[in-house]
Length: 277
Image (cartoon, rainbow, N blue to C red; front, side, top):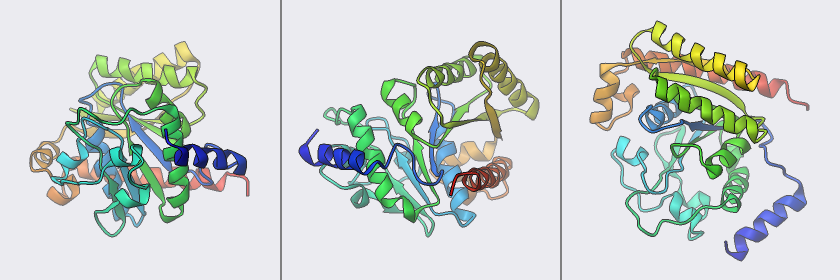
């Protein structure tokens, strides 16, 4: 890591800014495995929040298998890889998608993608602190899985939204994510979204199995944010490389994501109201 970033981290420590933002606004969306619809949720959740007059920055943290640019049919020459290489500042790689929604794209297909360390993740959070006043929510679409760097990122966030699906393997992988967070003393608030549900009962059963395991083995409680149906329109929106709300505003999944966004705004407002002045 170069001197500039190291110096910034040292200055941050001296200023005693801490790991958390002044108000609860950093959301890391994660999953224990690929294929749960994590990026689909992140993009559509961010878009729905922006439609509810929230200023949102969505960051794709995938350095070599980015999906956000594919999902939105957008090519960007400036990506999160440029920031991690320290050839660009965070402000320089922000793309204005709509009036309330900004994006930072990940990267794909590079053999020389930058190697990320805990120090680099710290540098990212310090840089976010410099611009966070411009946003109501900053959403990070994490890499799939739960290696040490992902756990470090999740731990430094205000909220972790774990996207799973009803399959037992996906539920088990979500449990592993929670277990690693608990073992690393994470204080981030944890919520679960069950995606690709055939019906509400399937989603309820998946969450119940996860919740029982977390409570029994980890002695912790995890909260449900909600369910998203396995919707034909959602599938078609992905094929058409459009956000669901833009593709079919009347889709069942679009309405469900709208309600999740409304609920999350209320959760964040309550958390901020409960913080010391």
